[in-house]
Amino acid sequence: MLDRDGPVPIYVQIADAIQAQISEGRLRAGEALPSEAALEAAFGIARTTARNVVRELRERQLVHTVQGEGTYVGPMGVPRIKQSKCLYLEIASDIATRIQHGEFRPNRSISSEKTLMMRHGVAKVTVRKAVAHLRQQGWVFTVPYRGTYVNEPEKWPTNRGA
Image (tube, rainbow, N blue to C red; front, top):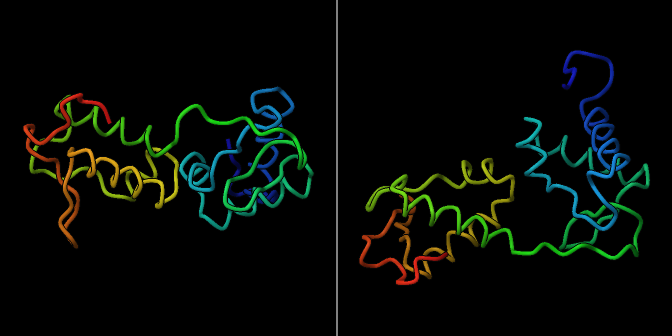
């Protein structure tokens, strides 16, 4: 539980919590640290605070950042653990499942980018890749300046996967 009124800055409290996860083995060497967007969603913080958390962990030499890839537990040179599936494909699969189960109905909009970012704890570019993938597969269509809508079922992919 964060003490938002106490003397210890929020970013230090979160860095302490993540350091505890590393010490306890819940975050292992080579594993990706949650993204800034995921930290924002998990802790209800601003992007600047999330950046300060990552900076603090780097200064403590608990993590390292690889430009364009992310931040990983351990020092530079530790083999990175690859994710089994791309995040955008996982998000697309989740949305396709929700479409199939009727949570998103034909000709009705899916969740906004911001909602999807918060739900999945990812950056806007990841959400956009997921939606582009769904569009390519035929699950959704986008109306500029209006939103993204569910296609009619006859336009959905025949294999029903994202």
